[in-house]
Amino acid sequence: MSAAANRSVTNRASGLVVPLVLIVVGEAAFRAGYLQGDVLAAPSRIFLAFIAALRDGTLLAATKDTMITTFGGLALGGLIGLALGVMLGSFARLDRLLAVPIEIARPIPSVALVPIAMVVAGFGYSMEIAIVGFAAAWPVLITTRSAIAEIEPRLIEVARVLRLGWIATIFKILLPASLPRIFVGFRLAAGIALIVSVTVEIAANPIGLGHAIMMAQQSLQPALMLAMLVWIGVVGFAMNGVLIFLQQRLFGRAALAGDPP
Image 1 (tube, helix red, strand yellow):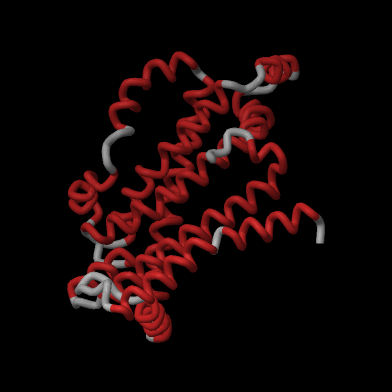
Image 2: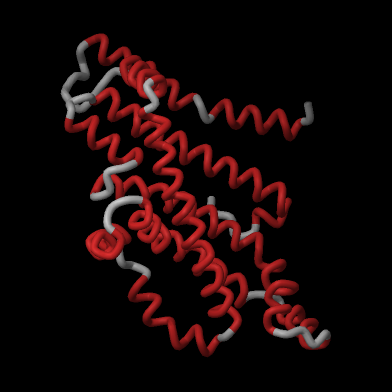
């Protein structure tokens, strides 16, 4: 095994130290009677509740619903954000024209759109995908606009010399040069999509992991509620890990450009 691979394994192993310590301390505190209540549960009970939910299909069904809305909204928002980002980054005049409307719309909490989305689409996937798409579009739009606007001017000159049309310039010059940074925005959007999806399920939509958390809380099952909560964190961690792997495989060292810490 190479030195780089050894360092990677060591770093990942060290990242497990704090969670393991918290689990051990939490279990000991419950067994000693220092922690108790209707909203808390020992790690061992949380694990047993997780296994039970996995066996009876509750966990998988809720995860499926949340993943459908997360990836559906991510695809919708990603495409909209990419298209608008390319247009705004390519045309400075259009960017100035839409700067105020975008900066007014961007801070609007996506959950605030729930009443409107419910009137238009009702409950279910469509409503949630629309809200998640709204939230996921902004990171992609902002990173794409910035990446396109900061492309080396000589690349644009090459396109003019080759007499490429606007569409050809986008797909042959602009997007290939901007993809590493755009992918960073997509990674940020993926995390936001999962957060918003679960939040909408908690607030209004009776499906998915968010709704499962609410049902466990209302039925006074803190172990199941916390098991669902931990599972959401694991799902988000796995999503980010897959995206980081793809980013490094696709772009190599260029993947580090503009990458958030």
